[in-house]
Amino acid sequence: MSKYSLFNKINNVKSYNDANSIKYDYKTAEGRIMLNTIFRNNPNNSDTQNLLLANYFTSNNYKIWQDQFTVSKENFLKELSIDKNSPIAQTDDFKKSLALGYVNLTGLSINLGDNYTQELPDFKIAVNYLIDNQQSDEKALENMVKFSVNSLQAWHEAIGVEYDQDYPEYNSAQDFLMVIRASNLTSKFIEKDKTTNWGNGNSFNFYLNFGLSGRFGFTEERLTMLNQAKLPETSIYSLGLQQKNLSSPTNVWNYTDFDWFTNENGISLKWNNKNRNINNNIMLLDLGYINFYIDLDQITLGSKTLGQKDFIKFI
Image 1: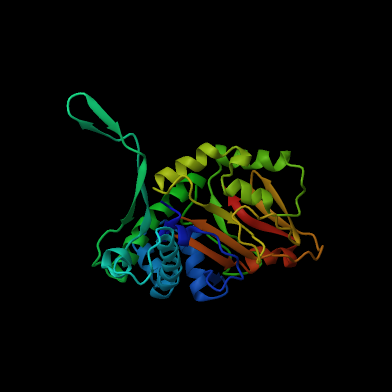
Image 2 (image 1 turned 120 degrees about the vertical axis):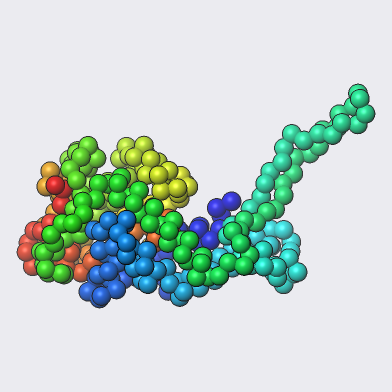
């Protein structure tokens, strides 16, 4: 079902260079709000929903998502040999659908009289899912943001985000991304960082650790988080510094001009001056309906000024 759904269109990774990818810059007021809301503040705060509605779940972004979903719906009609201008495609139920797919019917039979049963062939029925064919875009966005606040809360609980922390001066070289609690999870992060053999000059360990990757043995933690967030177990969850021209949630082998170190104090960055400069500051978060890039600016680039700096703190 997820192949033809609004959720799939939003949750799908696009490259940073894609015109339809959503981007923020920490140097701007909007970027600062998004970073604080997503990475630092308690999602249960009273202003979280309004901040997300004003800065992410906007009418402009909703139009982008709907336009992409419209293409998927047209492809679904092609599978059924139905013209996109057919009466079916013009109904409110079809236009307001959130997902399209098939229900497979197997093992059916009919009884003919007392002594004869006719087995029927397996077949499938095309179906669409919707909440209300009269639902406004504004109401749809309100529902999406309520759902996403729960997803965000589940993610924060999974990685142990600490709230009400003191941060350095905004976008100074000392500024860092977030604070999380020291736990069994961070101990596993540290151990995985010690045992990999591909070196410190790329962001791959960060992606595998904080992406709760099965490759690093975090399958149980990942599934627990997705279930608590009410997200499909097959949905994309990704956090990493992805190369700007790539669009795969797993293609984050990104070399940086700083080395990455993980220990009991957290993750730190040490400038290595190797001039790789593939991507030193653009980070992707893809979690359910929340899917955007953000230019972290001095949160990572401050390592050039300081030599070595904090990126994420464990306390």
